[in-house]
Length: 147
Length: 147
Length: 81
Length: 81
Image (cartoon, rainbow over all chains, first blue to last red; front, side, top):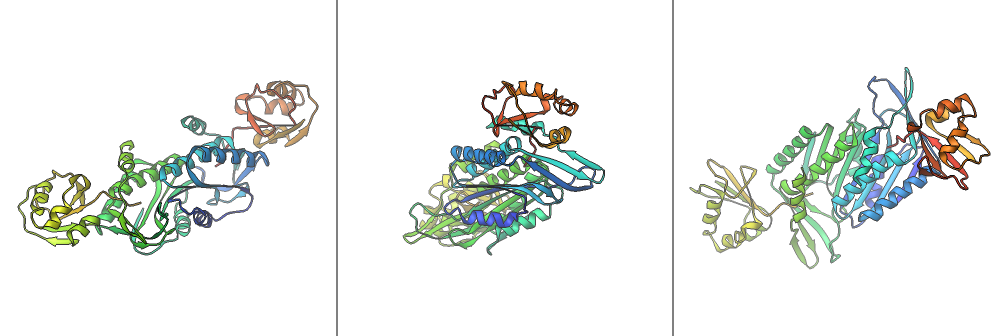
C-alpha cells in the first residue's frame, strides 16, 4: 500500500509498470488517472491545487485502509499532486491489484469516490481572464451513497 | 478507437501514456491490465493463448463500438496478446478516456465483461505436470446481465 | 463449407480446419452430422453445453440456421482477458 | 487553539492560520465566535452550507464538540481527484 502526496510531476505509465511489477500473483490491475482538462472557455493556463498537509495523508491512508479491508486486494496505490499544474498534466492516480477484476474495479472506484469528497484537496482554475475555485459536484457527494 | 490483437509483448505503461496523450480534453483515464498469474500448484511455466483470427478483431471492434455508443468516451483502446506468454507478462489491456470518471469506469468494466465472454480467446496453462485449458467462470457469463 | 475448431475441440478432433459438403439446415443439424464422421468428432461434440458456435465469425445459438454460411466454427466458452 | 483555513475561506479571511483562545463548546459555537472577529470572518462564514470542518484533522459535523481540540480547520467541499 502506498500513498504519495507530492508537488512533483509523476509519470503515470512508469508508476503503473512499477505497481504491476510489485503485485506478483494478482491477475487484474486497474488504474485511474485524473488529468488537467481544458475549461469551457478554452483558455486554462494552470490548475492550482491546495491541500491540507497532514490531514491529506491521514485521509488518504484511511481511505486506502478501508478499501483493503473491504476487497481482496494484492496492493493499492494513490498518488496526488498539489501546487501549480499545467493543462494535460496528470493530477493524480489510483491503482489497485487483485486476483479478480471485480475487486480491482470496485476498489478503484471506491478510492476515487472517497478521495473526491473526503480528501482535503481544492482545485483552482487559472485562466487569462481570472482565477476560480472549482465547485464540488453534487454527483460526487452522492456517489458515496453506493458504498 | 484502437483494437490490437498481437503476438508481441506490449508495455502497459508506455501504452497508457500514449493513450492519455492522445485524449486532450478528457479528464478521466481508466485502464485495466490482465496479467499472467501463478496457478494454485505454483509451477506455471507459460500461458498459451489461442484465438480465432478474423473473428477476434471483428468481435473486439463490435464491443468497443457498443461502448462508444453507450458512454460519452473521448477514446478507447483494446490490446490483447495471443501465443505463448510467460508468468507476470501482461496478457491484455483496455483503456478508456472520458470527461467524467463514471463513464470511463463503466465503459472499461463493460469492455472487460464482454471481452471475457464474447471475444474468441482461449487460455491454456502449461505447468511442469502438464497442460490444461482454463475453464470459463460462470461469474464471467453472469456479469453480462448487468449491462 | 469451412469448419474451424479451437482449443480443446481442435485437440480432440485432431485438426483446426476441415472442409465439408453438407445440407445441414442448422448448427445442431451440422453437429449431428459431424458426430458421425469419426470417433474423435463424436467425442469432441459429446457435451453440447460446453460448446459454442460461430457462423461466418458471428457467435450464434445452436439452433441458428446455416443458410449460405461459408465458415462455421466450434469452440469452448471463451476465456480471454 | 490553532485555526486553519483553506481555498476561498483562506482567501476571504486573508490568512491560512491563526491562533485563538476560545471556550466554544462546538464547531458551530466556534464559527459564531469567529464571525465577530472581523468583517472578513463574517463574510467567509456567511454560508454555512458551503463550509466543511475538521477537528484535529478529522472531518466532523458542524455540531461536533471541540473538547480538547488542538487544531480546527475550515474549508469548502473538497474537489480533489
